[in-house]
Length: 113
Length: 115
Image 1 (cartoon, helix red, strand yellow):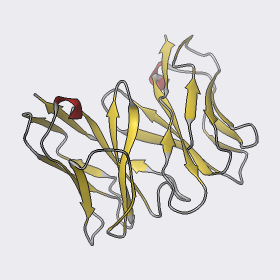
Image 2: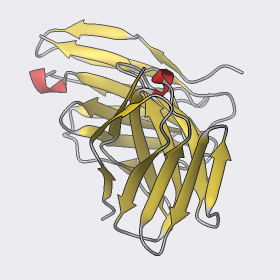
Image 3: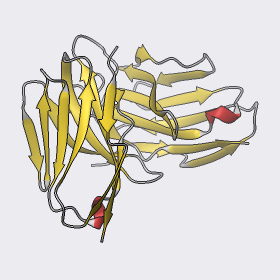
Image 4: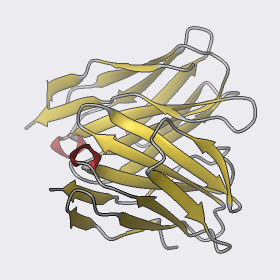
């Protein structure tokens, strides 16, 4: 059974700092891994999707990497801004047929002005 | 292009009642997945429908059920509501199964409060 862990559970950084959020998964046989952000009481907004054949994806100040062999993905946020404050979740889809997506609990990020 | 639409946005129900939530996926998306989100448990998978067929089901009691129509719109129903059913219910759609090759797009959710 796939398990997804995100550490730390919460993170507080000053504005402008570069930061890394971690996502670990137990089963390396994944089809893809997707990163989301969630604002309080809202739905999830997709940030980046990495296919199993890819090593990383970039969008603006965000860069996500995937290392299946070590069961890890990282989300790098450059030059953080107060608007980046949200909860960040990762989700892994196992490969092989109709599998269930497993989500991490998330990392709650606060960027202090 | 319209996103994933969930209705209603908020609901207050009494214990023992039943409730129906609706999700309209992005046009052309055939997969709809439902999740329950609570502060302590995170996102818990309820079920996934693909082309009107339930493809996967999470570990929820039979009080939770769903269906998908030919236009890919989906509904989930919770009967005999309990206080513990209070949660944010999220719907996600994708062109293929689960997140597939294109990933999930989520709706804004329905906030259900059971009193």
